[in-house]
Length: 354
Image 1 (cartoon, rainbow, N blue to C red):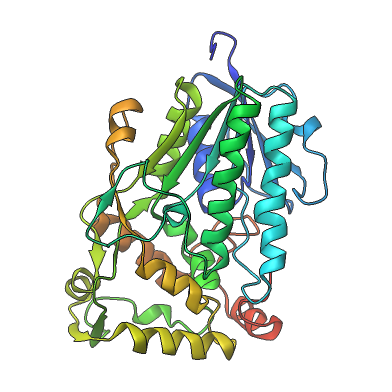
Image 2 (image 1 turned 180 degrees about the vertical axis):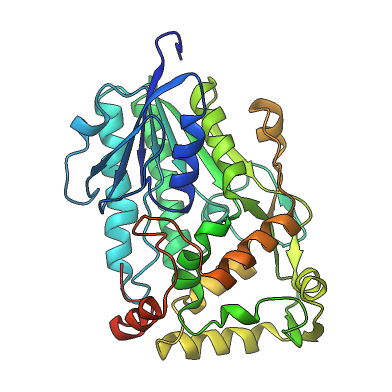
């Protein structure tokens, strides 16, 4: 990619957790001169080099939006309504395909897509898999089904549009302080008492067999996206940190007593709460997390020169601080926490609102 004239980058889904991080990181990159942020809803947030436009991937023509871009970064994703998977399919799969096809039709040189660890087929939580691990997902939840389907679509697009450099980023779980309210709303719901999330106030921490995950700071993931934008790389890149986080890790962080909990009991509790509209995360999503492999990020380190700056304890301490403080940003997806916001979540149905 020729950076002599400066690059124009279009970011679709620019106002969420990862989108805001990527727009900020692009703004600090000397080779980037213009950033177009696209979101479904208007935003008051601003960032250097960036202008924002409102567009919906399910209804709007994206060819004029991506025309003349040197790279398109696609992030747009709906987790809710969790009780209506046809709605998330329309946005997450059909909407993404409309962006991919627009980028190919306009011969955009690079398409960088935010896939996920959830695209991978189930594996043991002690295994660290590389990018050649199968990406068939877990069929019991919308999120991995959708991520896996888009992997298959991009397999075909790579053959149909070889002039477009396609990159698939597959990060593990991504957090920052300002994403705390959004992720509380998307996955836990309004009943979580943020003030209790501090050392010494949680008496016990459940230990679920083989339940562990890798966590990332948003700014570290954003750095990887920028590197993939300006370097001539193709294909998939795993993004993760070490060590993995599990119940024992969290028990030590909170100075809590460890209590073993069977997987079946945890799943039944989530199932009952989800059907009662008390939590937004479905039991299928829990099943997905329980079967995720760990990721080997060697390729990102060697080919992108990527190295995460934040350790898991630093990431979680910052995120938990955000939960306690109701942190956010002036964008619709990242709006800060308030009593009125939580009441609105209950009134509109937990897990129901896109």
